[in-house]
Length: 119
View 1 (cartoon, one colour):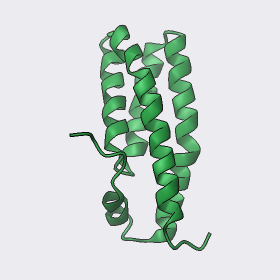
View 2 (cartoon, helix red, strand yellow):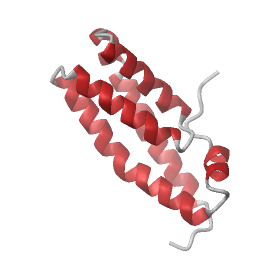
View 3 (spheres, rainbow, N blue to C red):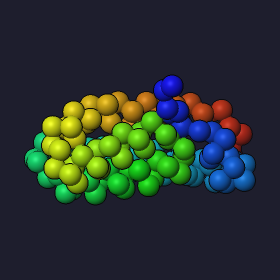
View 4 (tube, rainbow, N blue to C red):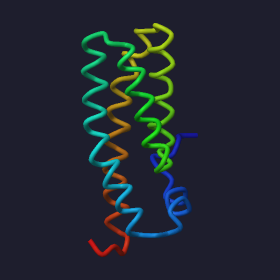
């Protein structure tokens, strides 16, 4: 089974269905995630595996708030590989990580656009 891009029910429950709070959380993820992706990929290009592990951990923390299972799982695998010096494995996960991140951003954008939010 393919992991969820994100879990709308998780976000809704976490924030008691408050559309304004949901939109604010999504805005935060949309603002931070592209920077985090760029940082992680740059760290990998420069063989900064301690940095990769830290950034992957930070990504997991932020995307777990929106129930982004697929990206969280990839980030966890990157973090573990980087901390264990499995550089080949960590590097191989960078492209799927980037794809999952931008898939999440697009899905969140579509979803939050469908909410009734006074923005």
